[in-house]
Image (cartoon, rainbow, N blue to C red; front, side):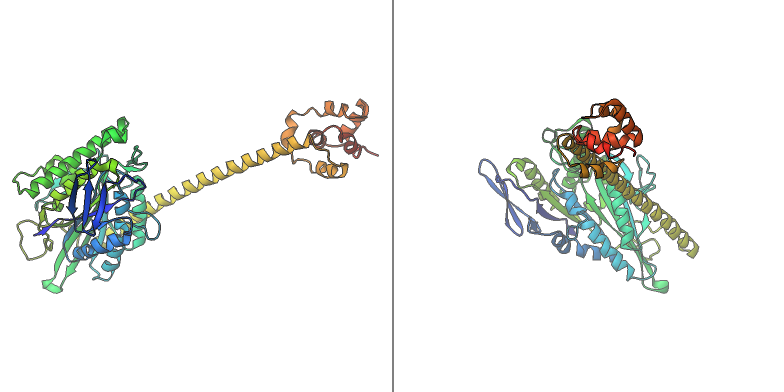
Length: 482
């Protein structure tokens, strides 16, 4: 038996009114507005001085090794909206800021590659949105996948995509795709708030031993970004956001009840009341080694949410799980309940090649989607830049036209600019050239007509508009035929 591990991560704050303090590496103090103080203990407490690598290296890295040894693992980020759960789990695409998921994927890819040729690493990703399960790696996902319990009592997701990972590049493309597809929305507390619970599931299947003594060992690690618990009075939810937050709070409420029931060793556990708790049944009182990452904000204004989260963690630490090495049905060892998903992969070489071929097709489809997205973004950027350049050019031309009507420019420079016909074609449409030329100083209608006929109209139109009528006579006279 092993107790559920709980660590705390404090979100950075600029507020001077702070109600939650880090006392030491394992303790925080919650100070109420009335001055009362309460201490909470954790496996570890992290604050703004601790990096993403520190969080992963001290808490998750050794769990990846457990998966390779055949033990199920669950890592969950829990806390109110806007406290950094998604940053902890997913991170950012900046060196040093990668979250738990890409770090674990990189380590799994490296370690599985050094195992036997029969070892297999697969990935699935789903979200629970408004109590509906959606496949984030399927290019044509169904609106709601169904759950069922197999003969061994394991919860399966019908039709969930499971792709083979041959390299970290495969994962990177799928990671970007799933992040784009996940449901997010803006609230008053978070501009990009996760509106669903996201579950990344990695499975490792490997063969231990040789010949007749060989056994198949399979295990999974679930990396879960739970949607934030919300107070609709604070988030100023719209109708759609209100529905989403209601569903989120409902599933989190069931999760709390499940954890409380498991901790109290009750006979009736309300797991079936929510799809989230059914999917995570192994994590609480099951056969998984579970790590709960509690994300909270230290601001005094968030004391109510922080206090509720801290109380929840106190109950969660009382949960006892029974993690042990899992074996597939091909193993001679008998258990009353198989702790891990069955290896349904066909063993014939032909079936194996077909599986790899189908996975390859799916990966290429996903790569194409990523490329299309990147091309769309480039096209939007080019269009935006072009519009900016055109507006700048138009503004510059208008300013030159305005200045030209007031400035006195010598005839020789004026003549050179005049000869570069076509530079200011936007003035042609509204200039009456003949009328302007008749108004030139010292030029009568006949001379004006002669001048006009001697050169393209637009030359004089530009000149009259840009340099004014005073210099028009001298410049125009240069074009009178001999």
